[in-house]
Image (tube, rainbow, N blue to C red; front, top):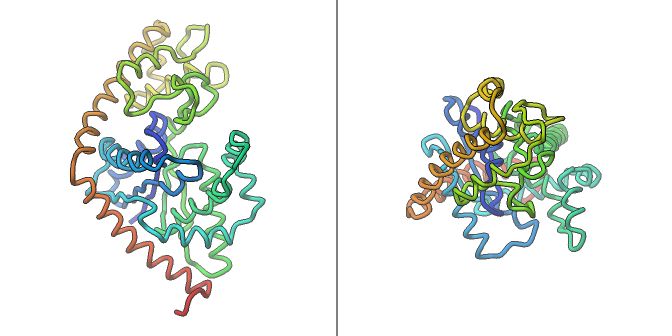
Length: 330
């Protein structure tokens, strides 16, 4: 049985890029008989930047409801909140002590965020990767669904696991990435050479799963393309239309070459109109389910059950780690 773990920060609503890059692979994996899924809400990671207390609590609950609305099967998956399992912090410190400042400072995400946040940079931004490694290694995770931009973080997790195993003996499973060939990285609708992000200052650059349907359609119709007018996949020369083709393909399960054939005699306006309707249909379905789960009292029971299972597994691992290092009396 392969254990698969994934998590998303509750720092805002899930974007279409988050869904196609992280959640859709999860839904594909849960259909495999030899897979056990652990899904966590990464609220500890969210506080590397300032958060409003009440908004954070609201985001955590909404994220749990969204996971279920997207199709998480509770017969095959366990969902929990990261901060409710203290072992994450405990192993996070151990991973920090086995990390090197240089390798943490070279992390692309740290360098990018440091440039944007020139004052009051949190030490948590630097030590984010060791905590993320702890999230994964606590559960002997075999596969981690990641986008292309997260491969570096998984690589440092693998390095830390191997470093600890070499130093203290076989302790951690070294995880492997699981990346979709199509849809792993969705780009901004305004700057298609940049990743779609909910932190983008331009709201037209991204679509969230809880966006107003008409607004979401307008965002697709106004998405940046080019002046050529040919619907062809070419990331280098036509990043805008290539991004829209990726979104279309990922939502419809129609291959990009087949979409190119379908729209070879069409224009951007007609293509965008069809894609906007496809996105609207997808969001409507998600939002109807979300509205059910967010008001369902059983949501807390789901999170309690996931927390209890996660703590049972993680506490056994942290005890093993402490024994190997020599911490405590036992």
